[in-house]
Image (cartoon, rainbow, N blue to C red):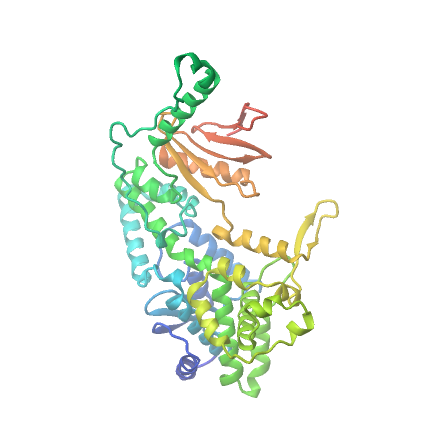
Length: 503
């Protein structure tokens, strides 16, 4: 076991090396924990204290058994906070501790400087502890079962937020009442009396009337515009008690805190892996440490069939950016070069790679990162491909090596964290106080069981019938839940049939 003195000495060295490479990070405090404490912290999302809920215990048990059977091992964990907290596993070798510290310093540099973390709470350790205290007060007052049942409903909806809302200034929530005479009017073409039947035929006037009524309905709808932050809408508009509003607001606040980590997973891990590799191989390693370091690092960037490794993809993209901007492999002249050997040996010796990397680290998230810097040359060199499941052979097979398809699949899986776009369209549907939501269909249908469970929990919070419009089994339809049963109404032109489903 490594002594505390050795760890603190190594910490000072690595901090100095990180600064020399240009990394800019918050003060970072390293805590040394055993594997049980590490699993507990991991189940709490890295925080030492969370509100009481069974899911944290479930995650702890899963990690404990996985560690006991040798299926996984947590080497590092770090919290986006000021000061930042990094955790070191007590049983690790010194070379592993040094690698983890180098990795953590790069993560904290990313947290501090990346645009997508700019709106996160930098004192979240204290805030989460306050959340836990408030939860415990509600449990003492209303009982564990009541609070936990409501928290279950809130957690099932925690992804129904607008991931871009911290960067968008919205219009005022309360729109002024429209002035008299400003409502939309039915359109009728001017004509002389004897020509009116030709200029304004009956079918035309009836269509204009229908359009007019639809415009009035839209102008008086509630909300006036679709609301993509569903949790915020429920906090403000659902018939909740004060403690329930507070609980839901806590779930929403923590969801927004963790959102940038999901939006930048590939970049963040790639950035940290790149810099720990540089620091370890150029500054820290001795001959005696090389084998242990290589074993750990190779496991970090290893790939397995059918699974994306963000460490591997991220670090290779950052290395590619450095090489391209060092050698001038960008711009009009390079893009218009059609000779592959010439492009391969292109080198203008610009030396702009490191500067470009820091710029990318500051401005991009995973979607824009891959959209901008995932190139056909990179896909070819990394041997990327898409795959699909063959039901006949009951196995996965390569589907395509076409670059456009590879990139499209990457971006589709990362946009909105790979989750469906859901918005509140009408909170008084049919003038009955029913909640109408819409799914922006982009080629992938909603998972039917997940949609039903989500509607159940929405009903628990809204207390009135809820429904969502999407594509079900290839047809446009509305799945509705009234608290007792589900009904699926097809709204496509080919069918307008209501069918009941088992609750």
